[in-house]
Length: 115
Image 1 (tube, rainbow, N blue to C red):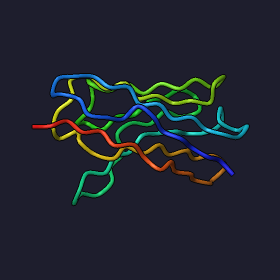
Image 2 (tube, rainbow, N blue to C red):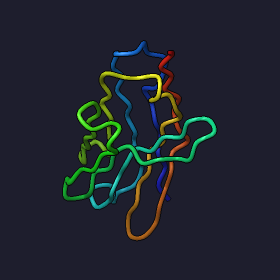
Image 3 (cartoon, rainbow, N blue to C red):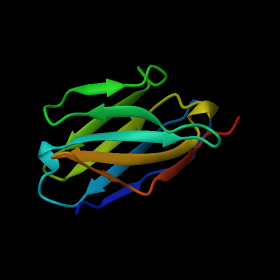
Image 4 (tube, rainbow, N blue to C red):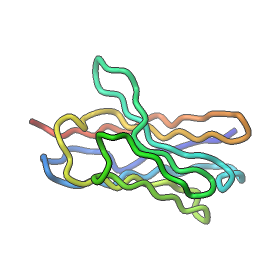
């Protein structure tokens, strides 16, 4: 069983920056695909960014150039650095890990960018 714990959410003014971190338990982290997803009130959950076991990254068009995902296999962590935050970035951000066909989710952390 893999446990994921997110941290780093909070309230930030438009144009500000925030760094989210997700710490994973287990010994297969380096073989996993990990990503950040978000869900705003009344909206469907969407993928924000993802990094594969080989280091390939994918981003939602809405965050390209503003967000950067990175992983540290030695620490079993995946971070999401967010810059130039906008009110539309307000959501609960959750970490997702997929390994050997199994998917695990963290509980999420709230990011609020007031308008």
